Structure formats: C-alpha cells, structure tokens
Image (tube, rainbow, N blue to C red; front, side, top):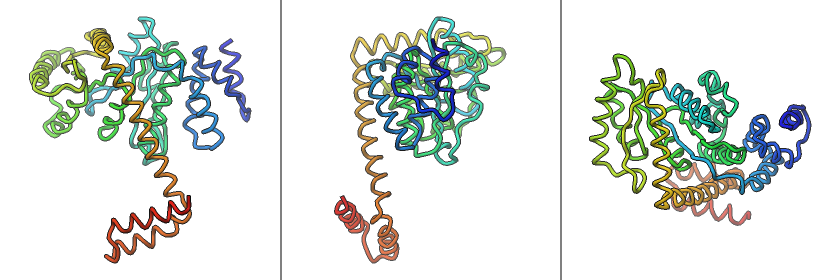
Length: 340
C-alpha cells in the first residue's frame, strides 16, 4: 500500500490531491513525507494554499514527539553524534527524523550538502528520515518551514525529532524556540576564542555533551566535563526545575550514547510532571504566531507598489538630513495604510 501511494507522488507533472498526502503521511510513507515538506517549502501561491490545508488537517496528528535541538562548536562532530545517537534510537524501535537549520542557506540560496552521506548509518535505517535545511528566504522563513516540517514528521509517526544547527550564531536562538530540550556539543581544548560563545550558549541549553571521549582523550573529556559541571552550578538553568549538566560520550565506541537518551527521558518525565513541558510548547506556538505576523506584515509592506516608489525618495531625505527617521517612518506608514 505504501508503494501505491509513493508511486502517485513519483509521477511527474501530476497534481496530487491533499487527501493523498494525508493518507501517505498517516501510513508513515517517507516518500510522501518528503514531497509534503517540499510542498510547504514552496513559495508558489497554489502550493502555499495546498500546504496550509495539509497542515490544518494534520494538527490532530502532531505534537506527540520529543523535539531535541543539537548545536555545537566546530569540530565537535555533530553529524557523527546524530548518526550514532539516531541509529541507537532506531534499534530501540524509535522512529527518528533529522532536520537541519542552516543560516547560510538564507544568503546563498542553497542547503547543506550530503546530509545522508554525513549520516551513513542512520540513513540506512528504515525508521529514519533525514531532511536538509530549507533553502532560500529569511532566517524567519527557515524557522517557519522547519516548524512545519516538525509537524509533518510527527504526523508521520516519528517519535524523536532532532533539529541540528549548521554553523554558529543566530540559529541557536531560533532552535531554542522550537524544541523541548537543547544540547550543545563541545570537545576538550576548544580554545579561548570560543569561551564567549560558550557562555552565551550555556544559558540556552539543557545539557552539554563532551564528545570524542575515547582513547587517549577520555581522561581529558572527563576533566572537561567536571569543569563544566562546576560552572553550570552557578548559572541559571535554561529550563525551570532542571539542572543543566555536562556529559561525555564517544560516537566511535558508543560509550555514553544510551546514557544521553536516558537523560532525555528523565528531562521529559520531570518537565511533564511539573507542567513546564506543555507550557513551553504553548509559548513556542504563540511566539511562532507573533513572529509569523511580523514577517507577513514586513513582506506586505515592502511589496507594496507605493512603498517601492517612495521608499528610495524618503531614504534620500533621511540620508541627507532633510527628514528625521521617526518622521520618515510615519510618512511611510501613512502611505502604506492609505493603500490598504
């Protein structure tokens, strides 16, 4: 039956009814899921309308997964960790989806390359789904598309959604707004130049994982873990009722990987019992709504024909000191609202 649905989606130049998307997703068909994500990522007006209808239909099916964010310093081996971690979860009978947020794709129009080759073991698992970062658009647009991709993956029955950041920067803040638990991966001797970034990150994450804790590096990794543990005791935790801690693991030997999953289970249990888990989900959804409103208004403003005509003129007045910024904004808003 899954092949029957997949076949419909592989035919080129064919219009696929939303009901077919919905049925395929309900059956956990990965081909249909991939096509559905492509649909919601499209900027074509017809695709947008169809995507919104599909998202409306899957709302009752979404929200049942554990959403984990994964970030890390350069060289920490995020992909290798996700490959091993996800594979171990699949062996436990879990369905694992990996989504990526790549801020560079908003500038280059491209997405991360070789996601499946970066995660060779996980990509071979029948219960795994790996999706590159949405390409093109603003970081806010990538945020929206990733959130909607999470909903689709949940509707397809995936138990664990891993959201990976590519690079270091604004994307970590975005990921924090869409996951239940957030991990930062680091290594021993990462360098003093990363200390500022680490300090900021420690205020966002629920756990720090020191990777490559094997061979001659194992003792150093344990020492680094203890150092982080001392620091974390004096920092405000990212999640109320949960003490952020440091852990070690090796993606090569597998040592500590299962322990990380046990930490996740403990986190989910504690935060669900306290209600923090559900409160965070509600707040994240509301924040997503407000962000989407701002983005839509911004898009409407700059696409307005009168604004397109008058903005360069008003910019010149501001640049040459003939008009204060506040007055320029008021003038532009009046032009925009009069057009409405």
